Amino acid sequence: MATILVVDDELGIRGLLSEILSDEGHTVELAENAAEARAVRERLRPDLVLLDIWMPDVDGISLLKEWGAASLLSMPVIMMSGHGTIDTAVEATKYGATAFLEKPITLQKLLRAVEQALVRPAQRLLPAGLAPMAGGLSGALHPDLPALDGDGQLLAAPNGPGGALTLGPQAEQSFDLDRPLREARDAFEKSYFEFHLAKENGSMTRVAEKTGLERTHLYRKLKQLGVDLARNKRGAL
Image 1 (tube, rainbow, N blue to C red):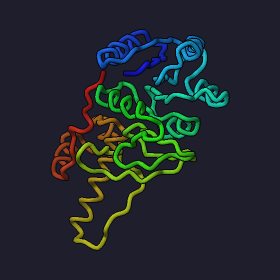
Image 2: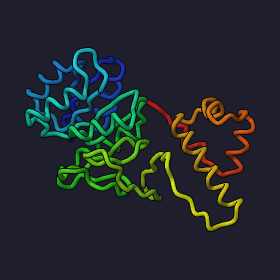
Image 3: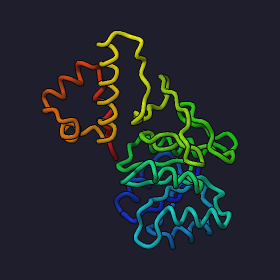
């Protein structure tokens, strides 16, 4: 089992993550700001750090950059944020983060990210066939954000069964037009609605406003197209 440092300014989140990780057999140390995180990291040399981005003194990205510049990133770092964006994921991976978790964090995603991060660096696994990041590092990005390398370029991430990770649909996609009109139109509409559902975190109200459809009509349309609504309803910590 590992020693894990949890850095978050919210007492409730620190306590909850500590309880979950302790139940998994890990030793958990807590810090509520960057100053405490520095001290714990120096004293204990943790095997893994869960680092919140938005903190009152020094933000998590700045602390990550500080550790990287001082050659102190001897452990994997998983970034956490309630406002996850592609830009944030790009920045985090550029400075050495191995994973990005958006709050509220599901139990499954937390444990999966921790398990993967604790694999020896030379053998660290990537979800769903993600390619390694630049510089020989590998990691698991937030599941709903595109896979990116160290330069912020998109990586191939095939979907599939058996534990494969399903990434959120992208704004630009290609379609096979050598097919009947109805099939081509349905394929486009399904991708269109899946994109907006992922973008709006499964909120039917916001998707209805965005697409200009009445909610009942929207729901019927999604069912007709075979859009999986359950995948957008995540149980959160």
